[in-house]
Length: 193
Image 1 (tube, rainbow, N blue to C red):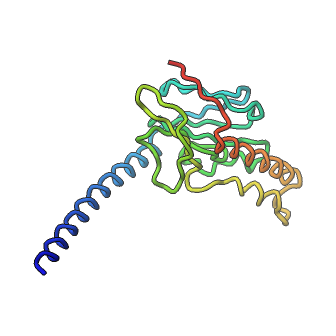
Image 2: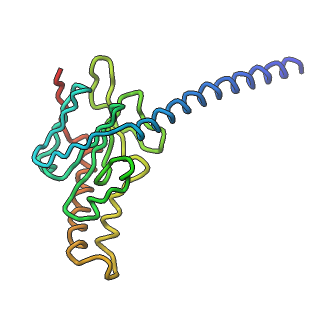
Image 3: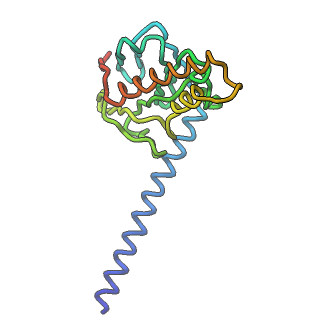
């Protein structure tokens, strides 16, 4: 009986210690994420190009030709990069996260290994490794705003113009295709260092 009590106490101690370690790591990551949202970001509109160059990370991403003029990039001081859809409809150009300095509709994120989010987005895959730093593609944070386009396109009231409904429907199709391109990793990565 004493043996079981000792084993129980030992396992309880191991559990408590590991919980504290995980909790501290989570808290640090939450603080880093919070600082990332507070830190300034740079909005990069690549309307005439099909590539995005990250000087800090040392890589270039070449998107499919159909992406030309339809995406927007937001770089954060932490090195995280948000890839967003930016279409012709007002709905696609809304700033759902204006306080964070982001525009368009999130399609996905590029993060280094230290910034893999704990907010419910999923890691799709590693896109490259440079100087021992791994870069990953993750899904849109906190869910996708793409359904907003379909909601606007199917609005049954007079608050949305017929033109906006039409543009939102077209944008919805484009955004879904671009999101699928991204999640299927249908792009090229080139090292620039």
